[in-house]
Amino acid sequence: MGIWGAAPFDNDDALDLLADLDEGRDEDLIGGLRDALAQVEPGGTLEAPEVSEAVAAACLVAAQLEAGPRPEEPTAAAWLEAHPFEVDASLRVSAAAALDRALLPGDNEWYELWEDADALDEVNAALAPYRAALRS
Image (cartoon, rainbow, N blue to C red; front, side):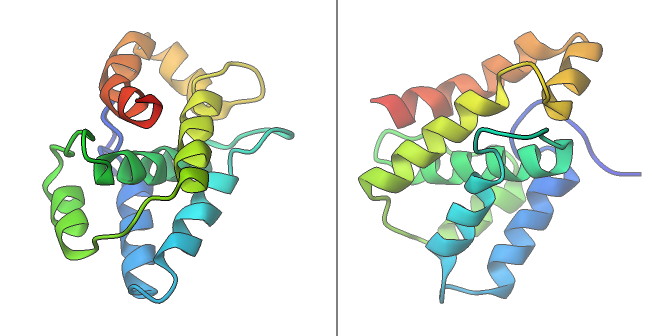
């Protein structure tokens, strides 16, 4: 049985993303983040695992910003300590857009799962500090 919680790293898909990024080491870390964020670009149906990965990637980007929140999940916090990276304007915009898209209904399985669980408020609250950091 997997883990599932409202915080961005409280699910197996997000932790799998960290492992995948770790496998590539620092060679193309930014490319791996961009690939994860691109999974929620407009057009087509969004599957929950891909959205979970994109949300995690966006939150990693936000956490690297000076005013960015640090994840409470220990694996994500340790990953960030071990993999510092620079956030340019384009990566920041992509991360903000990914979080915005994740929180839109319609052809979005991830959103529907949270809606069905009556937990959208909890998810919005968990993502709010990351969204604010990306917008500041």
